[in-house]
Image (cartoon, rainbow, N blue to C red):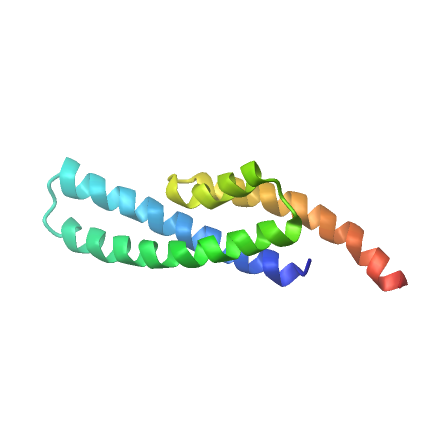
Length: 112
């Protein structure tokens, strides 16, 4: 597995996570606090998150396929983009695991 596969997943996990947190804050401002300008922010962020979540799904699925994850783990990573702040924690855990695997693979590739 190439490091670039992990990097693009990490970038999309952060983007998806930030947009989802902004969306939640916008919803609280719109419905909870009754702020007028929050409706526009919520609409823009919702559309951006929706489209970028699809990109996140593609990158996360590609990462899971190349890392040969079981189906349960794959589903958890895919759903992490829909739970506020979960993308940050799942990304951190996945990155630690795969960075270690990439470090173990690097010497084997250099010797070959």
